[in-house]
Length: 151
Image (cartoon, rainbow, N blue to C red; front, side):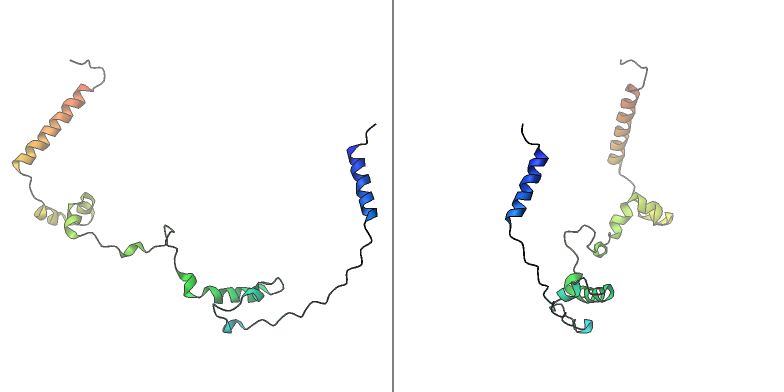
């Protein structure tokens, strides 16, 4: 009969452990005393900030060092590829002539007296074109009425 997989694995593991020589106990090396941290006031962007990232450093001291690092203008440049990082308030304003032609501006920004004075009356040709378009639209609307047969 063949040997069960787990029993075979266990047997081979024990055999390989018996073949290995006994390991010597690891001597603990005395760790070097930690280097004193530089004062946060004297840090510059070129300084080495790695000692402040060690796990034994207090959080308040680490945060103070990082604030000093990120206070550099180099890190204060907005990302040009970020959609909302630009200053979009510096654009040119809408000229008053164009603003006067906008319907929303007429109703919201200007007095009614200003509208009447600056509004030009359309010419006879323009009136005819507008009337023809209105008639065409009304005729099209009548032919599309429900329950009406095409003539």
